Length: 494
Image (cartoon, rainbow, N blue to C red; front, side, top):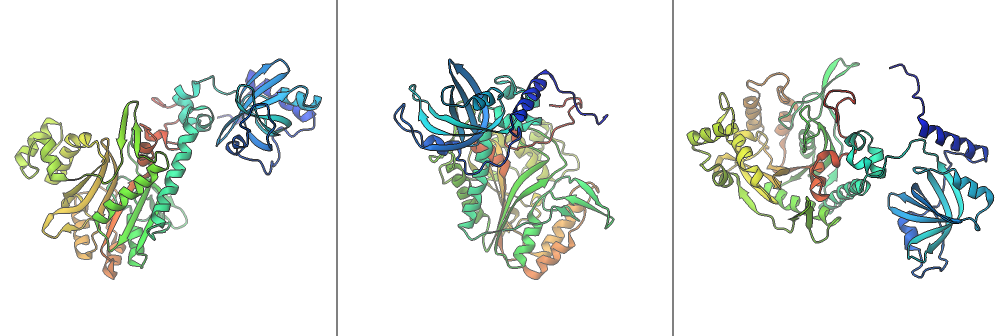
Protein backbone atom coordinates (compact mmCIF):
# COMPACT_ATOMS: atom_id res chain seq x y z
CA UNK A 1 0.00 0.00 0.00
CA UNK A 2 1.28 3.46 -0.89
CA UNK A 3 -0.23 5.24 2.11
CA UNK A 4 -1.55 7.99 -0.18
CA UNK A 5 -5.13 9.14 0.46
CA UNK A 6 -7.80 7.91 -1.92
CA UNK A 7 -8.82 10.44 -4.56
CA UNK A 8 -12.40 11.66 -4.13
CA UNK A 9 -14.90 10.39 -6.70
CA UNK A 10 -17.27 12.75 -8.51
CA UNK A 11 -19.95 12.42 -5.84
CA UNK A 12 -17.50 13.24 -3.09
CA UNK A 13 -16.22 16.25 -5.03
CA UNK A 14 -19.73 17.69 -5.17
CA UNK A 15 -20.16 17.11 -1.45
CA UNK A 16 -16.81 18.72 -0.72
CA UNK A 17 -17.90 21.79 -2.65
CA UNK A 18 -21.03 22.01 -0.51
CA UNK A 19 -18.94 21.50 2.63
CA UNK A 20 -16.80 24.49 1.67
CA UNK A 21 -19.91 26.61 1.09
CA UNK A 22 -21.27 25.65 4.50
CA UNK A 23 -17.96 26.61 6.09
CA UNK A 24 -17.91 29.92 4.15
CA UNK A 25 -21.32 30.73 5.66
CA UNK A 26 -19.76 30.49 9.12
CA UNK A 27 -21.08 27.04 10.04
CA UNK A 28 -18.93 24.13 11.21
CA UNK A 29 -19.67 21.40 8.62
CA UNK A 30 -18.78 18.73 11.19
CA UNK A 31 -20.89 20.22 13.96
CA UNK A 32 -20.66 20.95 17.64
CA UNK A 33 -22.48 19.58 20.68
CA UNK A 34 -26.26 19.70 20.35
CA UNK A 35 -27.74 19.46 23.83
CA UNK A 36 -31.25 18.78 25.08
CA UNK A 37 -32.64 17.23 21.91
CA UNK A 38 -35.41 14.65 22.03
CA UNK A 39 -35.37 11.28 20.37
CA UNK A 40 -37.47 11.17 17.22
CA UNK A 41 -39.82 8.74 18.95
CA UNK A 42 -40.38 11.30 21.72
CA UNK A 43 -40.92 14.05 19.15
CA UNK A 44 -43.51 11.98 17.27
CA UNK A 45 -45.41 11.54 20.54
CA UNK A 46 -45.70 15.33 20.78
CA UNK A 47 -47.31 15.73 17.36
CA UNK A 48 -50.94 16.93 17.71
CA UNK A 49 -53.72 14.57 16.71
CA UNK A 50 -55.37 17.30 14.62
CA UNK A 51 -53.88 18.44 11.30
CA UNK A 52 -52.75 22.04 10.90
CA UNK A 53 -52.54 22.72 14.64
CA UNK A 54 -49.23 23.88 16.11
CA UNK A 55 -47.86 21.53 18.73
CA UNK A 56 -44.96 21.89 21.15
CA UNK A 57 -41.55 23.25 20.30
CA UNK A 58 -39.18 20.31 19.76
CA UNK A 59 -35.45 19.85 19.21
CA UNK A 60 -34.32 16.73 17.36
CA UNK A 61 -31.28 15.36 15.54
CA UNK A 62 -30.86 12.70 12.88
CA UNK A 63 -29.60 11.61 9.48
CA UNK A 64 -31.18 12.82 6.24
CA UNK A 65 -32.75 9.79 4.54
CA UNK A 66 -35.13 11.28 1.96
CA UNK A 67 -35.87 14.68 0.39
CA UNK A 68 -38.43 16.02 -2.04
CA UNK A 69 -39.84 19.40 -3.11
CA UNK A 70 -43.27 20.87 -3.68
CA UNK A 71 -43.28 24.51 -4.79
CA UNK A 72 -41.94 26.67 -1.95
CA UNK A 73 -41.91 23.71 0.42
CA UNK A 74 -39.15 21.15 0.97
CA UNK A 75 -39.80 17.86 2.71
CA UNK A 76 -36.94 15.92 4.33
CA UNK A 77 -37.08 12.67 6.30
CA UNK A 78 -34.55 12.22 9.08
CA UNK A 79 -33.83 9.13 11.13
CA UNK A 80 -32.28 8.34 14.51
CA UNK A 81 -32.08 5.03 16.37
CA UNK A 82 -35.71 5.36 17.51
CA UNK A 83 -37.39 6.06 14.17
CA UNK A 84 -38.06 8.55 11.37
CA UNK A 85 -39.95 11.82 11.06
CA UNK A 86 -40.72 14.25 8.28
CA UNK A 87 -39.31 17.79 8.29
CA UNK A 88 -41.19 20.63 6.61
CA UNK A 89 -39.05 23.54 5.36
CA UNK A 90 -41.17 26.53 4.25
CA UNK A 91 -39.57 29.24 2.12
CA UNK A 92 -41.71 31.88 3.84
CA UNK A 93 -40.80 30.79 7.40
CA UNK A 94 -37.00 30.66 7.06
CA UNK A 95 -34.35 33.33 6.64
CA UNK A 96 -32.42 33.59 3.39
CA UNK A 97 -29.36 32.21 5.19
CA UNK A 98 -31.25 29.19 6.57
CA UNK A 99 -32.85 28.43 3.18
CA UNK A 100 -29.42 28.55 1.52
CA UNK A 101 -27.94 26.32 4.23
CA UNK A 102 -30.69 23.76 3.63
CA UNK A 103 -29.78 23.79 -0.07
CA UNK A 104 -26.30 22.50 0.75
CA UNK A 105 -27.65 19.36 2.48
CA UNK A 106 -27.28 15.88 1.00
CA UNK A 107 -28.69 12.46 1.80
CA UNK A 108 -26.68 11.02 4.67
CA UNK A 109 -25.95 14.37 6.37
CA UNK A 110 -26.52 14.63 10.12
CA UNK A 111 -28.54 17.67 11.13
CA UNK A 112 -30.16 19.24 14.18
CA UNK A 113 -33.59 20.83 14.02
CA UNK A 114 -35.47 23.27 16.25
CA UNK A 115 -39.08 23.51 15.23
CA UNK A 116 -42.76 22.91 15.96
CA UNK A 117 -44.43 19.51 16.19
CA UNK A 118 -46.97 19.43 13.36
CA UNK A 119 -49.32 17.10 11.52
CA UNK A 120 -49.76 17.73 7.79
CA UNK A 121 -53.10 17.77 6.00
CA UNK A 122 -52.36 14.21 4.87
CA UNK A 123 -51.90 13.17 8.52
CA UNK A 124 -48.10 12.77 8.44
CA UNK A 125 -46.33 13.47 11.78
CA UNK A 126 -43.84 16.25 11.03
CA UNK A 127 -41.72 19.07 12.41
CA UNK A 128 -42.01 22.57 10.93
CA UNK A 129 -38.41 23.74 10.83
CA UNK A 130 -37.51 27.05 12.47
CA UNK A 131 -33.76 26.54 12.82
CA UNK A 132 -31.38 24.16 11.00
CA UNK A 133 -27.99 23.18 12.44
CA UNK A 134 -25.46 21.16 10.45
CA UNK A 135 -24.01 18.43 12.70
CA UNK A 136 -21.93 16.43 10.21
CA UNK A 137 -21.52 16.71 6.45
CA UNK A 138 -21.46 13.23 4.92
CA UNK A 139 -18.88 12.91 2.13
CA UNK A 140 -19.99 9.43 1.05
CA UNK A 141 -22.76 8.81 -1.45
CA UNK A 142 -25.47 6.55 0.03
CA UNK A 143 -26.05 3.18 -1.65
CA UNK A 144 -28.73 3.06 -4.29
CA UNK A 145 -32.15 2.23 -2.94
CA UNK A 146 -32.24 -1.40 -1.66
CA UNK A 147 -28.64 -1.95 -2.82
CA UNK A 148 -27.31 -2.19 0.72
CA UNK A 149 -29.63 -5.09 1.45
CA UNK A 150 -28.65 -7.16 -1.54
CA UNK A 151 -24.90 -6.53 -1.63
CA UNK A 152 -23.22 -8.78 0.92
CA UNK A 153 -19.96 -6.88 0.53
CA UNK A 154 -21.63 -3.75 1.86
CA UNK A 155 -23.69 -5.54 4.51
CA UNK A 156 -20.85 -7.40 6.17
CA UNK A 157 -17.75 -5.30 5.52
CA UNK A 158 -19.40 -1.92 5.98
CA UNK A 159 -21.87 -2.70 8.72
CA UNK A 160 -22.31 1.01 9.44
CA UNK A 161 -23.97 1.39 6.02
CA UNK A 162 -26.10 -1.68 6.66
CA UNK A 163 -27.28 -0.19 9.96
CA UNK A 164 -28.25 3.07 8.24
CA UNK A 165 -29.80 1.78 5.02
CA UNK A 166 -30.60 -1.91 5.55
CA UNK A 167 -34.25 -2.66 6.21
CA UNK A 168 -34.71 -3.60 9.89
CA UNK A 169 -30.99 -4.04 10.60
CA UNK A 170 -30.68 -1.33 13.25
CA UNK A 171 -33.87 -2.54 14.94
CA UNK A 172 -32.51 -6.09 15.04
CA UNK A 173 -29.22 -4.98 16.58
CA UNK A 174 -31.03 -2.89 19.19
CA UNK A 175 -33.20 -5.92 19.95
CA UNK A 176 -29.95 -7.80 20.62
CA UNK A 177 -29.10 -5.26 23.32
CA UNK A 178 -32.60 -5.58 24.82
CA UNK A 179 -32.29 -9.38 24.85
CA UNK A 180 -28.96 -9.27 26.69
CA UNK A 181 -30.36 -6.74 29.16
CA UNK A 182 -33.30 -9.08 29.81
CA UNK A 183 -30.90 -11.95 30.52
CA UNK A 184 -29.14 -9.81 33.13
CA UNK A 185 -32.46 -8.79 34.69
CA UNK A 186 -33.58 -12.42 34.98
CA UNK A 187 -30.34 -13.44 36.68
CA UNK A 188 -30.35 -10.43 39.02
CA UNK A 189 -33.84 -11.52 40.04
CA UNK A 190 -32.33 -14.81 41.23
CA UNK A 191 -29.40 -13.18 43.08
CA UNK A 192 -26.71 -14.11 40.56
CA UNK A 193 -23.52 -12.01 40.50
CA UNK A 194 -21.97 -10.92 37.21
CA UNK A 195 -18.17 -11.16 37.02
CA UNK A 196 -15.34 -10.81 34.53
CA UNK A 197 -12.69 -13.48 34.10
CA UNK A 198 -9.49 -13.57 32.02
CA UNK A 199 -9.59 -13.67 28.23
CA UNK A 200 -5.93 -14.74 28.03
CA UNK A 201 -5.42 -18.24 29.41
CA UNK A 202 -2.21 -20.12 30.11
CA UNK A 203 -4.14 -23.36 29.47
CA UNK A 204 -7.11 -23.53 27.11
CA UNK A 205 -9.82 -25.51 28.85
CA UNK A 206 -13.52 -25.83 29.53
CA UNK A 207 -14.43 -27.12 26.05
CA UNK A 208 -13.14 -29.31 23.25
CA UNK A 209 -12.09 -26.74 20.63
CA UNK A 210 -8.99 -25.43 18.88
CA UNK A 211 -7.78 -22.16 20.41
CA UNK A 212 -6.17 -19.05 18.99
CA UNK A 213 -2.59 -18.82 20.24
CA UNK A 214 -0.71 -15.62 21.05
CA UNK A 215 2.56 -14.65 22.72
CA UNK A 216 3.15 -12.45 25.76
CA UNK A 217 6.49 -10.82 25.05
CA UNK A 218 7.37 -9.48 28.50
CA UNK A 219 6.78 -12.84 30.21
CA UNK A 220 7.97 -14.84 27.19
CA UNK A 221 5.04 -17.22 27.41
CA UNK A 222 2.48 -18.64 25.05
CA UNK A 223 -1.14 -17.79 25.83
CA UNK A 224 -4.53 -18.80 24.45
CA UNK A 225 -7.63 -16.74 23.79
CA UNK A 226 -10.28 -18.40 25.92
CA UNK A 227 -12.48 -21.05 24.37
CA UNK A 228 -14.90 -21.13 27.32
CA UNK A 229 -15.70 -19.30 30.56
CA UNK A 230 -16.23 -22.38 32.69
CA UNK A 231 -13.13 -23.14 34.71
CA UNK A 232 -12.54 -19.67 36.13
CA UNK A 233 -16.21 -19.33 37.09
CA UNK A 234 -16.01 -22.64 38.96
CA UNK A 235 -12.94 -21.36 40.79
CA UNK A 236 -15.09 -18.45 41.96
CA UNK A 237 -17.70 -20.89 43.25
CA UNK A 238 -14.94 -22.57 45.23
CA UNK A 239 -14.11 -19.11 46.58
CA UNK A 240 -17.65 -18.61 47.85
CA UNK A 241 -19.63 -16.88 45.06
CA UNK A 242 -22.53 -19.31 45.06
CA UNK A 243 -24.46 -17.86 42.10
CA UNK A 244 -22.18 -16.48 39.41
CA UNK A 245 -22.28 -15.73 35.70
CA UNK A 246 -20.38 -14.02 32.93
CA UNK A 247 -21.44 -12.75 29.51
CA UNK A 248 -18.30 -12.62 27.40
CA UNK A 249 -16.55 -13.23 24.12
CA UNK A 250 -14.97 -16.60 23.48
CA UNK A 251 -12.72 -17.58 20.59
CA UNK A 252 -12.45 -20.87 18.69
CA UNK A 253 -10.04 -21.30 15.79
CA UNK A 254 -12.52 -23.22 13.68
CA UNK A 255 -14.77 -22.84 10.65
CA UNK A 256 -17.29 -20.18 9.66
CA UNK A 257 -20.80 -21.13 8.61
CA UNK A 258 -24.43 -20.23 9.16
CA UNK A 259 -24.29 -20.80 12.94
CA UNK A 260 -20.55 -20.45 13.69
CA UNK A 261 -18.24 -17.45 13.95
CA UNK A 262 -14.70 -17.80 15.40
CA UNK A 263 -15.45 -14.98 17.88
CA UNK A 264 -18.82 -15.20 19.58
CA UNK A 265 -20.68 -14.29 22.78
CA UNK A 266 -21.61 -16.77 25.47
CA UNK A 267 -23.19 -16.64 28.87
CA UNK A 268 -22.16 -19.22 31.45
CA UNK A 269 -24.07 -19.51 34.72
CA UNK A 270 -23.23 -21.58 37.82
CA UNK A 271 -25.56 -22.18 40.75
CA UNK A 272 -24.28 -23.83 43.92
CA UNK A 273 -26.51 -26.56 45.34
CA UNK A 274 -28.40 -26.91 42.07
CA UNK A 275 -28.20 -29.49 39.28
CA UNK A 276 -29.01 -29.81 35.59
CA UNK A 277 -32.74 -29.80 36.35
CA UNK A 278 -32.31 -26.42 38.08
CA UNK A 279 -30.58 -25.24 34.91
CA UNK A 280 -33.47 -26.42 32.71
CA UNK A 281 -35.87 -24.27 34.71
CA UNK A 282 -33.49 -21.30 34.55
CA UNK A 283 -32.85 -21.70 30.81
CA UNK A 284 -36.57 -21.73 30.11
CA UNK A 285 -37.03 -18.56 32.17
CA UNK A 286 -34.06 -16.71 30.64
CA UNK A 287 -35.15 -17.38 27.05
CA UNK A 288 -38.88 -16.78 27.52
CA UNK A 289 -38.25 -13.51 29.37
CA UNK A 290 -35.93 -12.39 26.57
CA UNK A 291 -38.49 -13.43 23.94
CA UNK A 292 -41.17 -11.33 25.65
CA UNK A 293 -39.12 -8.19 24.96
CA UNK A 294 -39.97 -8.82 21.29
CA UNK A 295 -43.19 -10.89 21.28
CA UNK A 296 -45.13 -10.99 24.57
CA UNK A 297 -47.23 -13.91 23.29
CA UNK A 298 -44.04 -16.02 22.73
CA UNK A 299 -45.14 -16.89 19.18
CA UNK A 300 -41.85 -16.16 17.41
CA UNK A 301 -41.84 -15.83 13.60
CA UNK A 302 -39.32 -18.11 11.88
CA UNK A 303 -38.62 -17.81 8.19
CA UNK A 304 -41.42 -16.61 5.95
CA UNK A 305 -44.23 -18.89 7.09
CA UNK A 306 -43.19 -20.68 10.29
CA UNK A 307 -43.79 -19.85 13.95
CA UNK A 308 -41.94 -21.15 17.01
CA UNK A 309 -44.09 -21.47 20.12
CA UNK A 310 -41.88 -20.80 23.15
CA UNK A 311 -44.67 -21.22 25.68
CA UNK A 312 -43.31 -23.23 28.63
CA UNK A 313 -42.97 -25.90 29.84
CA UNK A 314 -40.76 -27.39 27.14
CA UNK A 315 -40.48 -31.16 26.51
CA UNK A 316 -37.58 -33.08 28.07
CA UNK A 317 -36.48 -36.09 26.03
CA UNK A 318 -33.72 -38.59 26.95
CA UNK A 319 -30.82 -38.89 24.50
CA UNK A 320 -31.13 -42.68 24.26
CA UNK A 321 -34.86 -42.47 23.48
CA UNK A 322 -34.29 -39.97 20.66
CA UNK A 323 -31.39 -42.01 19.32
CA UNK A 324 -33.54 -45.15 19.07
CA UNK A 325 -36.37 -43.19 17.46
CA UNK A 326 -34.35 -41.55 14.68
CA UNK A 327 -31.23 -43.69 14.24
CA UNK A 328 -33.37 -46.82 14.27
CA UNK A 329 -31.32 -48.84 16.77
CA UNK A 330 -30.35 -49.03 20.43
CA UNK A 331 -27.25 -46.93 21.07
CA UNK A 332 -25.78 -49.81 23.11
CA UNK A 333 -25.91 -52.11 20.07
CA UNK A 334 -22.36 -51.51 18.80
CA UNK A 335 -22.80 -53.45 15.57
CA UNK A 336 -26.05 -51.71 14.63
CA UNK A 337 -24.59 -48.27 15.46
CA UNK A 338 -21.57 -49.03 13.23
CA UNK A 339 -23.90 -49.82 10.31
CA UNK A 340 -25.77 -46.53 10.74
CA UNK A 341 -22.45 -44.70 10.99
CA UNK A 342 -21.24 -46.27 7.75
CA UNK A 343 -24.49 -45.32 6.03
CA UNK A 344 -23.84 -41.67 6.95
CA UNK A 345 -20.14 -41.72 6.05
CA UNK A 346 -18.96 -41.47 9.66
CA UNK A 347 -15.39 -42.69 10.27
CA UNK A 348 -15.29 -45.25 13.10
CA UNK A 349 -11.71 -46.53 13.00
CA UNK A 350 -9.94 -45.72 16.28
CA UNK A 351 -12.87 -43.76 17.73
CA UNK A 352 -14.40 -44.35 21.13
CA UNK A 353 -17.84 -46.02 20.82
CA UNK A 354 -19.55 -43.08 22.53
CA UNK A 355 -17.91 -40.63 20.12
CA UNK A 356 -19.35 -42.67 17.25
CA UNK A 357 -22.74 -42.71 18.96
CA UNK A 358 -22.68 -38.93 19.29
CA UNK A 359 -21.71 -38.42 15.64
CA UNK A 360 -24.59 -40.69 14.62
CA UNK A 361 -26.86 -38.68 16.93
CA UNK A 362 -25.80 -35.44 15.24
CA UNK A 363 -26.36 -36.95 11.78
CA UNK A 364 -29.71 -38.62 12.42
CA UNK A 365 -31.44 -36.83 15.29
CA UNK A 366 -30.61 -33.13 15.48
CA UNK A 367 -32.43 -32.03 12.34
CA UNK A 368 -35.61 -33.54 13.78
CA UNK A 369 -35.39 -31.50 16.99
CA UNK A 370 -37.79 -28.73 16.03
CA UNK A 371 -38.28 -27.86 19.66
CA UNK A 372 -37.87 -26.18 21.89
CA UNK A 373 -36.83 -29.47 23.45
CA UNK A 374 -34.34 -30.39 26.17
CA UNK A 375 -32.27 -33.45 25.22
CA UNK A 376 -31.15 -35.04 28.49
CA UNK A 377 -28.76 -37.69 29.82
CA UNK A 378 -25.80 -37.92 27.44
CA UNK A 379 -23.16 -40.68 27.30
CA UNK A 380 -20.79 -39.95 30.18
CA UNK A 381 -17.54 -40.50 28.29
CA UNK A 382 -18.11 -37.43 26.09
CA UNK A 383 -18.85 -35.19 29.11
CA UNK A 384 -15.59 -34.89 31.11
CA UNK A 385 -16.79 -32.04 33.33
CA UNK A 386 -20.17 -33.57 34.18
CA UNK A 387 -21.46 -35.51 37.17
CA UNK A 388 -22.66 -39.05 36.49
CA UNK A 389 -26.07 -40.41 37.41
CA UNK A 390 -25.87 -42.19 40.75
CA UNK A 391 -27.78 -45.23 39.48
CA UNK A 392 -25.99 -45.35 36.09
CA UNK A 393 -22.42 -43.99 35.89
CA UNK A 394 -22.39 -44.46 32.10
CA UNK A 395 -24.88 -41.56 31.78
CA UNK A 396 -24.01 -37.92 32.47
CA UNK A 397 -26.45 -35.43 33.98
CA UNK A 398 -26.32 -33.13 30.99
CA UNK A 399 -28.82 -31.50 28.67
CA UNK A 400 -28.72 -29.57 25.43
CA UNK A 401 -31.55 -27.32 24.27
CA UNK A 402 -32.50 -27.51 20.60
CA UNK A 403 -34.82 -25.32 18.55
CA UNK A 404 -35.29 -25.92 14.82
CA UNK A 405 -32.31 -28.27 14.80
CA UNK A 406 -29.99 -25.65 16.31
CA UNK A 407 -28.29 -26.12 19.68
CA UNK A 408 -28.92 -23.09 21.91
CA UNK A 409 -27.81 -24.21 25.38
CA UNK A 410 -25.68 -26.82 27.08
CA UNK A 411 -25.84 -27.60 30.80
CA UNK A 412 -24.55 -30.04 33.40
CA UNK A 413 -24.74 -31.16 36.92
CA UNK A 414 -21.15 -30.12 37.55
CA UNK A 415 -18.50 -32.64 38.50
CA UNK A 416 -16.93 -31.63 41.82
CA UNK A 417 -14.96 -34.79 42.70
CA UNK A 418 -11.28 -33.78 42.19
CA UNK A 419 -10.05 -37.38 41.92
CA UNK A 420 -12.53 -38.30 39.19
CA UNK A 421 -11.95 -34.97 37.45
CA UNK A 422 -8.20 -35.57 37.28
CA UNK A 423 -8.76 -39.11 36.01
CA UNK A 424 -11.14 -37.88 33.30
CA UNK A 425 -8.73 -35.13 32.25
CA UNK A 426 -5.95 -37.69 31.85
CA UNK A 427 -8.21 -40.01 29.84
CA UNK A 428 -9.25 -37.15 27.59
CA UNK A 429 -5.67 -35.94 27.08
CA UNK A 430 -4.41 -39.36 26.06
CA UNK A 431 -3.53 -39.30 22.37
CA UNK A 432 -4.38 -35.63 21.84
CA UNK A 433 -2.11 -33.55 19.63
CA UNK A 434 -0.45 -30.44 21.06
CA UNK A 435 -2.70 -28.15 19.02
CA UNK A 436 -5.87 -29.48 20.64
CA UNK A 437 -7.44 -27.25 23.23
CA UNK A 438 -7.12 -29.45 26.28
CA UNK A 439 -3.75 -31.05 25.53
CA UNK A 440 -2.41 -29.75 28.86
CA UNK A 441 -3.64 -30.67 32.31
CA UNK A 442 -5.15 -27.77 34.26
CA UNK A 443 -3.61 -28.74 37.57
CA UNK A 444 -4.70 -25.54 39.29
CA UNK A 445 -8.35 -26.32 38.53
CA UNK A 446 -7.94 -29.76 40.11
CA UNK A 447 -6.31 -28.05 43.11
CA UNK A 448 -9.31 -25.74 43.37
CA UNK A 449 -11.67 -28.73 43.39
CA UNK A 450 -9.63 -30.26 46.25
CA UNK A 451 -10.39 -27.15 48.31
CA UNK A 452 -14.06 -28.01 47.77
CA UNK A 453 -16.62 -26.88 45.19
CA UNK A 454 -20.29 -27.19 46.19
CA UNK A 455 -22.53 -29.45 44.14
CA UNK A 456 -23.84 -27.21 41.38
CA UNK A 457 -25.66 -26.81 38.12
CA UNK A 458 -23.90 -25.07 35.25
CA UNK A 459 -25.31 -23.61 32.05
CA UNK A 460 -23.94 -22.17 28.81
CA UNK A 461 -26.10 -20.33 26.25
CA UNK A 462 -24.88 -19.05 22.90
CA UNK A 463 -26.08 -15.44 22.94
CA UNK A 464 -25.70 -15.00 19.17
CA UNK A 465 -27.79 -18.07 18.40
CA UNK A 466 -30.44 -17.01 20.91
CA UNK A 467 -30.62 -13.61 19.19
CA UNK A 468 -30.90 -15.40 15.82
CA UNK A 469 -33.87 -17.36 17.12
CA UNK A 470 -35.66 -14.41 18.71
CA UNK A 471 -35.13 -11.99 15.79
CA UNK A 472 -35.92 -14.46 12.97
CA UNK A 473 -32.38 -14.34 11.58
CA UNK A 474 -31.03 -17.30 9.63
CA UNK A 475 -27.30 -16.52 9.85
CA UNK A 476 -25.10 -15.69 12.80
CA UNK A 477 -23.47 -12.93 10.73
CA UNK A 478 -26.84 -11.13 10.76
CA UNK A 479 -26.76 -10.68 14.54
CA UNK A 480 -23.05 -9.93 15.08
CA UNK A 481 -22.10 -6.32 14.44
CA UNK A 482 -18.78 -7.19 12.80
CA UNK A 483 -18.49 -10.88 11.80
CA UNK A 484 -15.10 -12.24 10.78
CA UNK A 485 -14.48 -12.20 7.02
CA UNK A 486 -11.65 -13.11 4.69
CA UNK A 487 -9.38 -10.33 3.51
CA UNK A 488 -11.28 -8.19 1.05
CA UNK A 489 -9.34 -9.31 -2.01
CA UNK A 490 -8.88 -12.94 -0.97
CA UNK A 491 -10.35 -15.67 -3.24
CA UNK A 492 -13.89 -16.47 -2.18
CA UNK A 493 -14.18 -13.38 0.01
CA UNK A 494 -17.77 -12.32 0.63
